[in-house]
Amino acid sequence: MAAKRVFLAGASGAIGASLVPQLVQAGYMVFGITRRKHKASWLRAWGAQPLVLDVFDRDAVVRAMAETRPEVVINQLTDLPKQLAGTLSTRDLEANAHLREQGSRNLIEAARTAGARRVIAQSLAWLYAPGQPPYAEDHPLDLEIEKADAMTVHGVVALETMTLKSPPLEGIVLRYGQLYGPGTWNTAQKGPVPIHVDAAAFAALLAVDTPHLGVYNVAEEKGLILAEKARRELGWNAAFRLQRRAA
Image: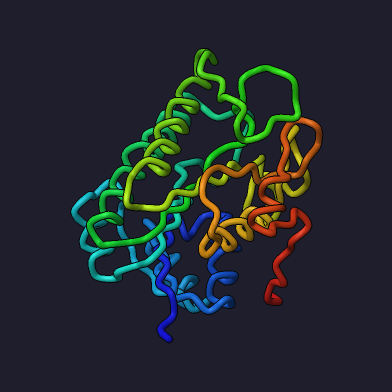
């Protein structure tokens, strides 16, 4: 039987660095998408087939997906600085929100055109409206949030809506907590909903073949959110860590 084809957008980010080896080890054929040419050799070394392209280039994305014919598309797109000094600027937030909207729209359009079966997208687990925590996935997002955070919420709502409501694609949204671990801004847990980058990537791996669709909180439970649904339906474990190669 031929290996299932997975098209991974954002393959050179922190989650991609953990997810690519997990997918390859699980037997999937991975097409890793990156804007950075120097990341191609890293992707190839892990067994993925690198494709260097810009997801804002709609025609390039459509061509790449038509050529690779993936069954599953994983959207781990972000546009954030490699290092964080202080807080994110308005420009950073605008760029990230724009990528979530336009980049995701191009991915989904290409996936539908190429006949993909499923799309899995990265979202955020700390944007719930004020209420009585801990919050499950059916709690509403905070659409009344103001100023800079409003851009983030708008981008997340657009991303989630496209992912879940683009038939015939099956949609899965993974609401990640604040990442920590190799390649992230944080070496240790930070914030009310932390999640190790390996455990976040593990949820994406599990989402490739699960029969369950919809939205999942993917974070360590520290009183703000519930991740019981991910444990029950995906078989996810927040304690998962990747066995990394020695440097």
